[in-house]
Image 1 (cartoon, helix red, strand yellow):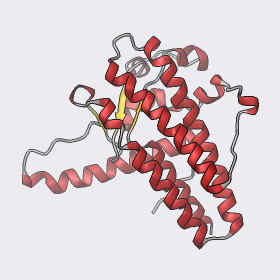
Image 2: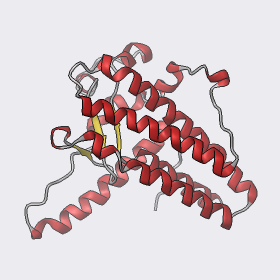
Image 3: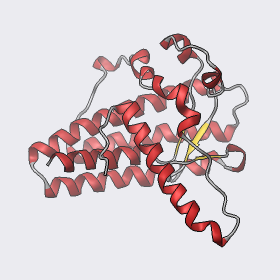
Amino acid sequence: MKGKLEQILHDTTVNLFKVSIFYIPESLLELMNIQKTKDVVKDINKLVLIDKDGFTIDLEDTKAGMFILSKKRFLDENIILLYDFKENNSKGGFEYVLEKYGEMVNSLLYLSEWLNSHVQDDMLNITTDQKTAFNLQHQFFLSHKHEFEKKFSKKSQIFPNSKLNTKTILSNLKPIVPKLNKQFVQKPISKGLDRREHIKKLKADTRAKAENYLLETVFGVNIIKN
């Protein structure tokens, strides 16, 4: 049972991060007393798009608003995964999964709302298309939370009286700041048939690395290692 619990939480959490737009706000440095090292500074107020395979992709070559639309598909997939888990596992195990998943959804819902509300102030050169992407991302998480609670009759509130603690939420991002450039790489571009197998392996390795890093640092989810 433990392995099944870890696997469903891993799979659903990975889906929550697929097709995302975010940035590390400069205010995080002072808030979390993070030293301004060279690696940290180059990650601050820098927009990042993560595709469905865990790669960061070039903002200049991507319409962020169109890109983010496919996020809903992975959120909807989580509802199906949860239904399937419910049918094939114990009630106690399912309730545990619902509780943990609800906490993750609420955390990302708040984070998406915070980023959407502050990105225009933090990113002076942000485009209308990029602002639209942040807004859509927040709306998708909000809609997903409502559907999750409706389908599974699970009201999850980790922030009493809706008073959201910015410092608590942003503290989850602290480990990411110094390591962001080391953990994510740009998606490789194929230049010939002879490179396909190499790129396929690189893609799989990078995806696993990106997914595991996000799960372990943001939510403390234990990764199943083969």
